[in-house]
Length: 125
Image (cartoon, rainbow, N blue to C red):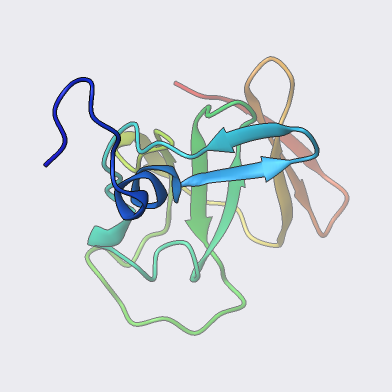
């Protein structure tokens, strides 16, 4: 073990810098800021229509009606809003069908486009 004033062995320096990546002439590293809860239900994102707001904002999910899924809990689909870490913020019954796409607007409103050409806009709360 190196103390102050002593050089660190080469293997220690490599281990400490292994999480840094070089991009052009700058160095970056990825740091884990918090634990995510998405692992609790690993299929949720694969079996749903998902829209994530920019800059780490909320994530909206609704059951994808085009994908066969096992029944879990209620038979009635819900529009669910999550934090980017996977904690449920809110849920509301989903009575619509024919969803083509979901996205978030710049003012964090959920925009849903349906196969009939109808566009619905929801607030996050």
